[in-house]
Image (spheres, helix red, strand yellow):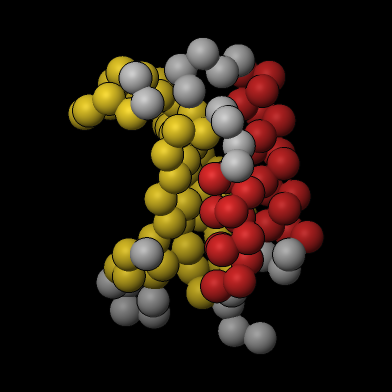
Length: 104
């Protein structure tokens, strides 16, 4: 099965603790692995000021995940993020072989 390369960035509420942040990262890493994803790379971007308010929050904790997966896994992952109260925004980008972006 051919796997595409994806990058998902999600923003956590600013009051999320480091322990909860780490547990969410581990949860999503294991979710990607269980669903057949590969080459998972997680980068903590830290707390940043938002350009505009999202749900009355001025700051957010950014986490970036790069991985290889199929489209069904991305839908499953984003659905899981949609129902997580600690995540205020998420965004997934698909990279093709020519290093161009396809935005979902």
